[in-house]
Image 1 (tube, rainbow, N blue to C red):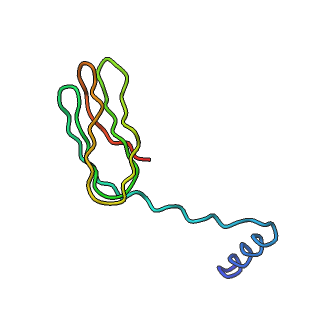
Image 2: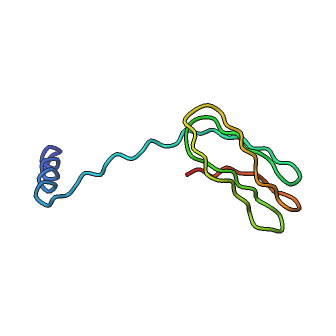
Image 3: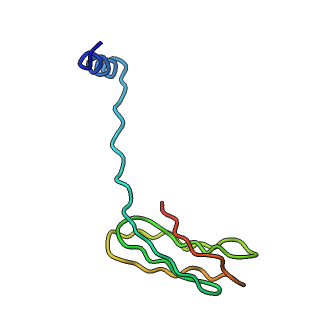
Length: 95
């Protein structure tokens, strides 16, 4: 079966069985981020569009998270939640 025959078969099966063609997915986020860490806290700065939050990876305690933020352009700096003793690193989590 040639390409046209395959395409016709797929279209026919779609019509016959009510199969839907999957909808297009949203474009991937376009964020570029940098982080900085100090003794117990730090910050993250992201440029572009998307939804993100800052994660404090703490030593000897649970990780801490900021709320989710959505930006549609420009550059935003958000401060990490401080750890009680010391912090290993700051990272950005994207949704």
